[in-house]
Structure formats: C-alpha cells, structure tokens
Image (tube, rainbow, N blue to C red; front, side, top):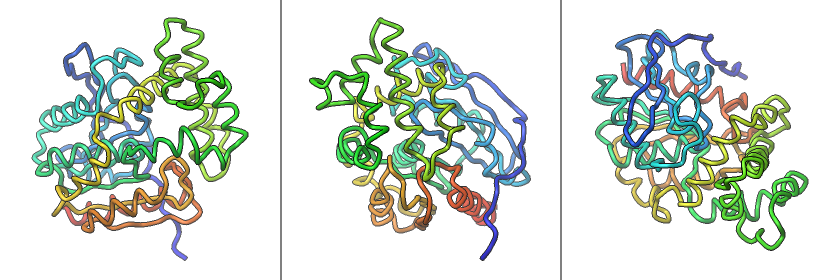
Length: 319
C-alpha cells in the first residue's frame, strides 16, 4: 500500500498585502511559492474560518504561485466579524480583483467545505478564468443540507454535542436553530453574542473530524475566532448564501471543459457524501475520490493525501 502524502514543508509568503475592496472592507492576501509559477487561489472554509499557514502547503512551491486571502470579516481582514456588505457575490467579485492583481489569465481554484461552495459560485460565474478545480467536502447550500446539520440529522449522530448546541436556545425557538442563533449573534449584548458564537462554533468543531480532536476543538472555542466564524456562517446560511435552491448543481453545466478533482470523506457529517455524487454527476469532467475512514476536514490523513496528489497532478497537466 503506497504511503500517504503529507503536506509540503512550511513556507512563508513572498508577498502580503491588504486590498481595499470597498464597502468599508480591507481584505488580507498573500502569495507563496514560485513567483510567476502556475497560478492558483486557495478558498478557505466557514464562511469565516480564515486561512492558516498550512493552507499554503498543499502546493509544490517549486511549481505553483499560490494566492491565499482571508474573506471579508475574518482572519486578518477588517473589520473583524462584520456582516455588512458581505455576501457570496461580494466574495466572487473580490476573487476577480485578486486575480487581476496577480496578473493571471486563468488559475487553479482550490476550496474545501464552504470553500467548495464559493469555488463553484466563482467558476460558474467566470468559467473562462478557471484552469482547473480541486474541491473537498462539497457543500451546495440546499435546504436539505442546512437542515441536516442545523436541525435534524447530525443531531442523531452526536446527541451529546447537539444538547450543548441547543443549550443557549429556549425550547420554544428550537424549531429553527439558524434563526434562533441569528437573533443572538446579532444581539447588542456582547455576552449573549459571545455565548452563542462559541456554542455555534464548537458544534462544528466537534463534528467535523472522524475521531475527536481536542486541539481542533480548542481552536474553535477561541472567542475571537468564534465571533467571526459564527456570525459570518450564520449570516450566510440565514440568507441561503444568496443562492437559489439547487443553483450550484443546476448550473454545473457551465463547468464543461474545466478539469477537476472532487475529494470527499465517507463519514463527512456536515457535508454528506451525496453532495459530491450529485456534483460529479452534473460535472463528469471532474474525478471523484471517496476517502474511506475519513470525516470532513482537510486534516484527515486520507483527504490530505488526495488533495496533495491532485495538486501535483494538475501541476503536471497545467505546466
């Protein structure tokens, strides 16, 4: 059995900057790898998770020129946790501005979880700007997907964690958990807002790995991180990410001619495997790799292996 691929060694960016995207938002971006190499953009999850140093390490630094950025309201972008002028389509426009800054005609788009959602929205809007796509943990924001994670479904797999997620919400409001949390995450009471942010974020942090991961859960319980993550994610899901029901799958025909790799853990709780199957059916030019014994995160060994292998494969094909 071949040895699983690990991430490339840690690398520092060769360029960093803040882009004024208007609407009061400043977006942090960075570039790493080989300047003038194969252009790629990394789209982080959440919404609201931000990038981290490991986000640079899926790509061979001798071949790729990778742009990473913290989406509006999170990470090093400012203002922190802002939901004003912050929609899917604002982010799609931001990606295009960043592509122009990079001077790339087309680039590889890499995104996992919410990053896969944003990648699809971007590619379906600007297909001529995409050379290839690597997508993990597919999420298309249909009502059934939202209900599965925030109303009934994952609750049956993790009743102990679900009880903690429900705790800040009175029983009378539990028929719509997303709406109940929105009320608290937009409250003027900072204590109420922070309690809700931590509960929302920890629910996700404790259900995204196949096996418990205390270090990851600890990161999700950090108040500063949780505030941006919960407010942005809830804001986006309250508005169905400004997508029509089924829009990303309906419009997948626009990806025709774009090669892709779809990578999905068999036991992904937040984003059921069926999402990846439906996308693959609508976009047969993409390969589908189901990782056995894996949950949702890119940190699962089998998923990490497939992401690095896909990036290496496209490095050869796009060279």
